[in-house]
Length: 144
Image (cartoon, rainbow, N blue to C red; front, side):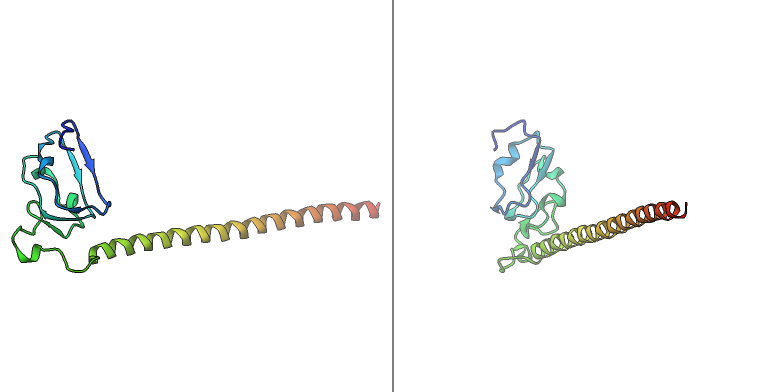
C-alpha cells in the first residue's frame, strides 16, 4: 500500500485486522482520511506529519493502540491490550447494533399490523357501503 502515493482516503474500519499499523503508511503524504477503528490493532501509532492530523475516532475500538493522538502513551502498562479475547467496547458495539435491529424489526412489525388492520377496516366499510347501496335500491324498487 505504501506505493499508492496518490491515495487520499483509506478506511479499513471494522475488519478484525490485528497487529501493528505499518510504518510504511507514513509515506502516503496525500492521505487525508484514515480510519482503522474497531479492529484489533496493537502497538504505537506511526509518527509522521500526516498521521498527526488524524483524530481519535480514526483509532477507536483498538484497545491495544497507543501514542498520539490517543491518551494512552506507549510504554505505559495501562496501554497493553486486555487479556480477554473480546473487549468490553466490542461487546458494547455489538449489543448496540443488535438493539438497533430489534427496533427496526419492531417498527416493521408494527407497520405491517397497522397496514393489515387499516386495510381490513377500509375494505369492510366499502363492502358495507356497497351492501347498503344495493339493498337500499332493492327496497326502493319493491316500494314502487
